[in-house]
Amino acid sequence: MGLFDRLKAGLSKTRSQITNIVRIGGAVDDEFFEMLEEALIAADLGVDLIDRIFDDFRAEIKRKGIKNKNDAYTLLKEMLAEDLTVTKTMGEFPPKPWVILVVGINGVGKTTTIGKLAHELRQTGKRVMLGAADTFRAGAIEQLKIWADRTGSDFVAQHEGADAASVAFDSVEAAKKRGVDVLILDTAGRLHVKANLMNELEKILRVIKRNTPHAPNEILLVVDATTGQNAMKQAEAFNETVGLTGLVITKLDGTAKGGIAIAMTRRFNIPVRKIGIGEGIDDLQDFDPQAYVEAMLGDISCQ
Ligand SMILES: Nc1nc2c(ncn2[C@@H]2O[C@H](COP(=O)(O)OP(=O)(O)OP(=O)(O)O)[C@@H](O)[C@H]2O)c(=O)[nH]1
Ligand SMILES: [Mg+2]
Image 1 (tube, rainbow, N blue to C red):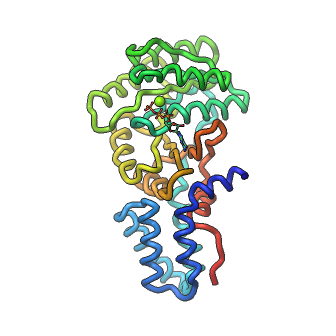
Image 2: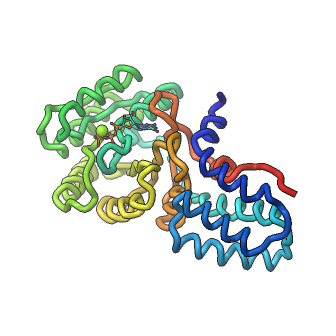
Image 3: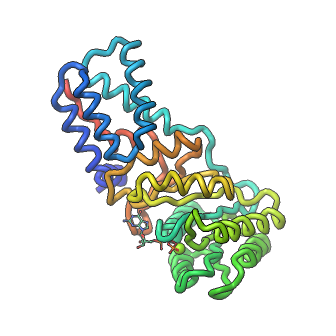
């Protein structure tokens, strides 16, 4: 399977729901809107957001004089893709080291995403370093070390229970000394509602900034697509604490909930940088809004 086919396969549940709706064909009617709305709810766009999207959608249909389902469906896809297109782009790594801080709640796929990202960067010839600032979970350091070995990345760690901010500091120092292009810092999974854990993250950020004013260049929140609407709460809390610059949505291979990409981008105006579509080293993709919406909603013709 090609990469795009895998994305499509990952989102096939959502797509087949909507495909069935549009295949019925004919003129746009209330039933058509209701069924599309239901499909988007199943995709986890969130009821409030869907209401707003459909207000705009209905207004556009009227304005453009659209009569049939196929044209309306194409219009909806265009509108959703537009929502996903946030203009800020990822940097070109000019200041060395380019520091990426990876945050999120437990088990969403932070460490795996770091491994995949390191692999991708290594393939473009970058010197990469992984910093083990998850000192909390047993086995976390070893897990990151395995990814460093697999990808030929440098590795900095202390020991389980060490101060995470101190590891972050060591990593930035080492990255500078060794002329590393990209330093990626792993952090412990933390519940967004636990104030003390969020404070620790703030401290990590402070230490990095004090050491290297241009850093971190990216603060990526990793969210698990299968958690649905709770991802919005996570994004809100992490954004407030550390100020997110990008999102990574993982586990899109196992869910019909692709809609959270749209919900989060629209709500926070933060771009989706990468999507995770499996556990393998190559299962990380750039986020292409058009391709994503096509994969989510399908591209069938339904006159
Ligand atoms: N199917 C699928 N599984 C994934 C994906 N990304 C990560 N996983 C799996 O999710 C599980 C948790 O991944 P980790 O990378 O350890 O998650 P984490 O956020 O670092 O977890 P903590 O460090 O415990 O907070 C692992 O079994 C991964 O293989 C993905 O895109 N698709
Ligand atoms: Mg981890």
